[in-house]
Length: 262
Image 1 (cartoon, rainbow, N blue to C red):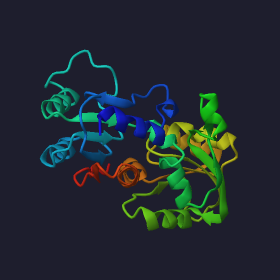
Image 2 (image 1 turned 120 degrees about the vertical axis):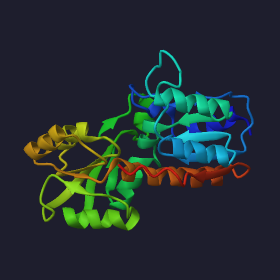
Image 3 (image 1 turned 90 degrees about the vertical axis):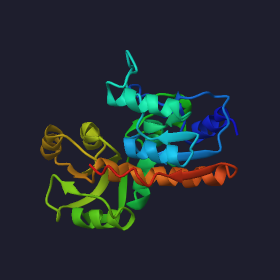
Image 4 (image 1 turned 45 degrees about the horizontal axis):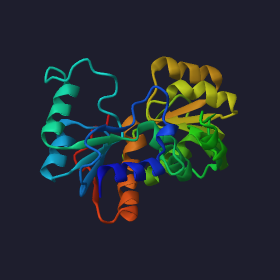
């Protein structure tokens, strides 16, 4: 299969139009006319995950976090980003990042987390800017009612059934009872105020700053943080499985070295 054809499939799964305006998604490194036979997914391109892709003769890395993320005035070995990009290019490795498009997709990360928690009729915290996608009920994050009232401790226990590697923290006592929740994977703490506006009494994300935690406390929204890695990496395994079913002629696998659990 040609790389451009696989990019089209990825765009069907996680439309780039769903990405946040500040994001850098899609094909970031590579020749669209190149042939693709072996593809590795990962959360982040690091020395370890890149070495794995090279050793396993991958043609493409689908990295959730984009590299480069911001425009680079130069690509040299003097920066970590430049060094990793040079290494990938020398190894004929293409790089594709779905990032916030995959976060917000219909089968994407936020909705997978909502399914784990049995959220009823998950709705975007913010509808997509694209009218067509908004009509499909897509947008940034999700929120909705829980199937019943939970304590924060029960909520965390429910997550641990699917995500045993989580490192949970909460802004409120674990015995606090909640009935509705907003969800934004990764670094979603900035959206706790929007979750409060939507009537949520809890908010789930990967990580948040001290001041975002203070905001949650002031708003009376119990924020649960499970770790940036834990809130997203599971979905890169799911993406590899999904692509394997849709494109059986390509060998897909999730990185075994991508374990920076910070």
